[in-house]
Length: 384
Image 1 (cartoon, rainbow, N blue to C red):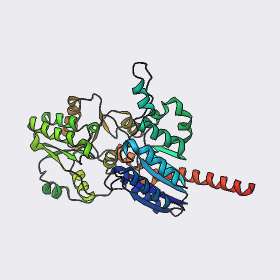
Image 2 (image 1 turned 60 degrees about the vertical axis):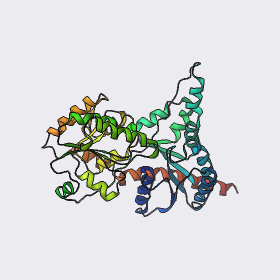
Image 3 (image 1 turned 90 degrees about the vertical axis):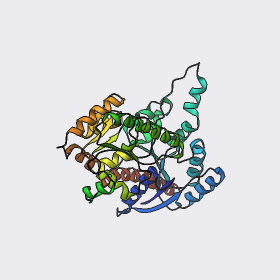
Image 4 (image 1 turned 30 degrees about the vertical axis):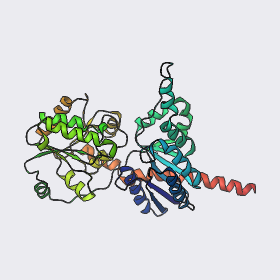
């Protein structure tokens, strides 16, 4: 079976990396041949159409093409146009993983008809409707995302037929670094390190952790291990200003984008990994912490986290009220627990979600599409 992977967006983007890692796993399978195409969409809509058409032509001989989608990397309001051009130009069967799915049924009221129409039939909604109706298979990473889609009554039949939940994979990550040396090189000796990993965005709870920092012991340092995209630059400036107002600027470090090598340095010296997301879909940063079986992962108790803890109870520590005091309580509890160096539940979760297991589930869906395509082709030949 020939599988094509379309990678959209800059290489450092999580969705680009997600697809790239799936492609790498596919290359290890004896029955898979892999073709990859990398594209970066610009503000020039006409050039984007040409780019997408040419990308589709690279997959002329493949059986299944898999790509990742969220509205940002596919062109925001123009994502529907870009998707149509690619889909219509590609002869292969198409599979998509939809990330960051927040779309759900919006109630109609006579007082807000425009709001209803925008929510249910605006550019974002049209892109999702197109994907569900036109793709051969649609993947989401959480049951929460599936439930949101199923709430849209007009799409429920198509969703039940096409949408499959496949959890975010966990990489096979082995780190062999001297923690003491890394702490010294990062000037973190004698510090208790709390890290929030990933793109800096208001939904990820950076402000909540910053509000908690003044209430934590003086030897605690917070690391924001990531960068802000252009839309979040004002939010980043506000975080810096707030840190100064709280007199904790010297206890906060913002790293910017990290290479794989530097990423491993920071996660190695982290005492507590914090994921205070107010909303969540498929979080690459959460999966990174699981990939090293970090024993102290803290997250707000949202449905996605509950899904993980249902698989392996106790894998992720949670706080239930979305405020800094609630976060401080769980952080203080874990900071005082100096003996705990292993969490067997998170190790079991890592095994369940490892790349090989998760890719098998992708491969099964690819095979179903491939077999159905062969059956249809055989039927056409018999009719001739």
